[in-house]
Image 1 (cartoon, rainbow, N blue to C red):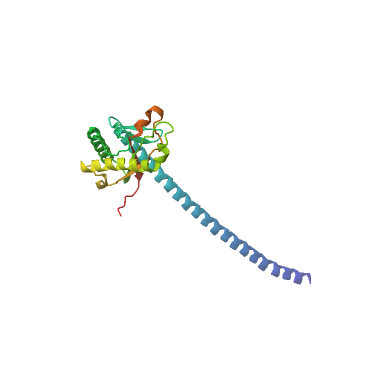
Image 2 (tube, one colour):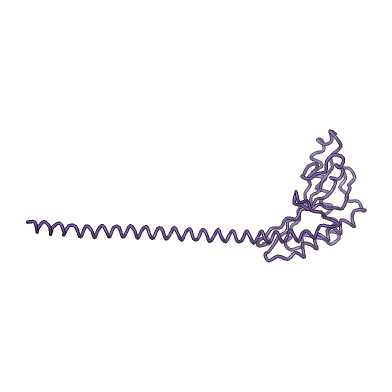
Length: 225
């Protein structure tokens, strides 16, 4: 009787043991496959992140080289403002009050400044495609003190300063400096009126009747629409 019971227990135990081990094996296999998938996904994410970081590092290196090359602009016609990260045209242009015409006395220097800008942009060599956004900004000077015209003519001075920048662009074009024809250069003109950053203050307010030029390099593939 005892032998029969022992055989029955053994007959029940071993199949159950095999089923248990099989189940554990299946669970371990599923966990292994899942862990392997998580590892591969993580590996892919790390490779992607590493590739992006590498691309950003290369882009930063190129921008640094371009900025160093743009230092060649500094001299007779341009100076760089490190605080505002832009170039200021050194030609002491002075417009008549409320007028946008460029006086003849300033045209030779403005032409040379444009030629210098174009020459520097053309001679910069980079390993990756680069596009330059060149912003020419016209400005206007406020009236002294709390003159009521500062508020009354606020909107008009946006138009006035824009026309000043437009006249500079047209003057360059008339003399063979058409930046729109240069591959990789996009020139934008604007007017900041009585406002804008880096303005002269107080007794130097009159010097705000000037141009600012900002060159922004953009690294990447250049496409033409």
